[in-house]
Image (cartoon, rainbow, N blue to C red; front, top):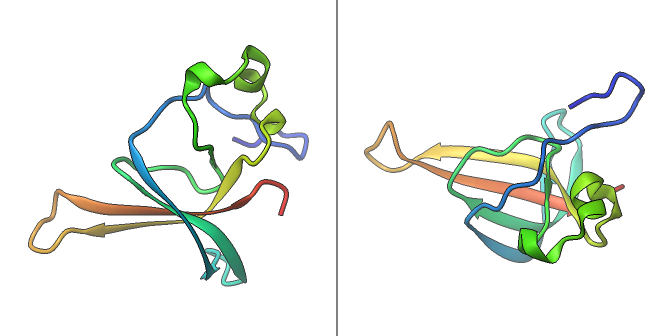
Length: 104
C-alpha cells in the first residue's frame, strides 16, 4: 500500500503454496513497458501487483525481516499478475505472478 510519503507499506507476511520457476522472460507491465522477469510463480490465490514474494518459510525470517521485507536479500516484486479461467470453468483459475528483483 502507498504510505503517502512516496514509499510502500506491506501487510504482515504469510506463507502461500506455489510453484516457483526461475525463468527469465520478457513481460509487459500494466502500463505497457517491457521488462525482463526473473521468475514466474504459479499460485493458488490472487496476489497484488507490486506485492513482494520470497522463496522461504516464515520461520526462517527474523522478526526484523518480517517487519521490514526490504531487508530480505533477493526478495522479488510482482510486476505482472495473470488470472485465467481453467478450460470449461468460471470458478477455477490458473494464476501466475511474474517477478523481478526488488529495486529494479
